[in-house]
Length: 376
View (cartoon, rainbow, N blue to C red):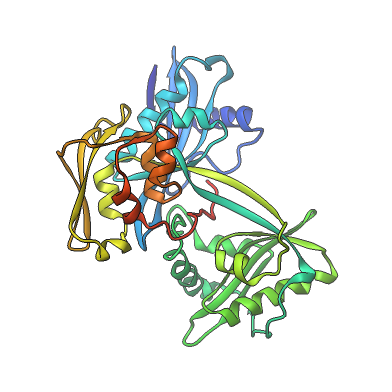
């Protein structure tokens, strides 16, 4: 078996594999910010995956992240280790390119867990009755134009930096101008070209899908919710993607029981020292100098396997070789710990951690459920 980089000449065959696997191709196999890997068995294309380059917010800082998607194996080649070989190659590729963590949406979780990915956070849609939108004061909203794009992106980035897991939506992986293709792009202007908030949505045969409802302050958020409620004469309900959990969780009037569609995405720490160095650690400033000696069990990423010492000192956090290995941490535990999705107690009960992980828990702090609001 040979695994190599996907080229433009391979796209037709790659798209065929993805069409067979998923019933459609979706986004292109290759585009700006996206690369791919191709597996061949006996000279025939047997599998493919893509890696999109993102930067993901963790603790207020961005960590380079490889978004793995479009993993497809030819039906005739299944059971021959093609998927595993592609994922192993992807780990090496991401490390070489400085992508310290990786995220993916798993259709077959067991395959990815066997290579060290595990629960990192959620991607959620909420369905709301439009007649229950809060009656906030009207805001001076207008349709967005191209000149608003930079300010609109800045408004999103200010929010995203406070929600663990969201990506910064930077080029080339995401073209901010694509938002203007949606049916509804409503902005609330501020001072000197600033955008105080915005609402994006598409209208389809099944109803209204709201992608972002983001405001810099409560008045703007409530005003945009009021605008959303204006669809009540046409539609009964809307599906709202959870980008800002404050809006959907604290300001809307959903009942105790309401409809939530949740996708759990998986996170993989590709390079532990690099990931720890890039992440923000807000709790570190309040911790006394301390260290935890890890024994990382990770056969698929041997570059960080073995004894590693996580050190907290002067508000900074780093990982260096050495230590006693007192806390044994399996590869699958690294992602859930890094994201704050699961604490050391849950990891221990799942058989993924042995030893005292109290410092690991204090360091992460877990301020809210990690989220993604983009599909790849």
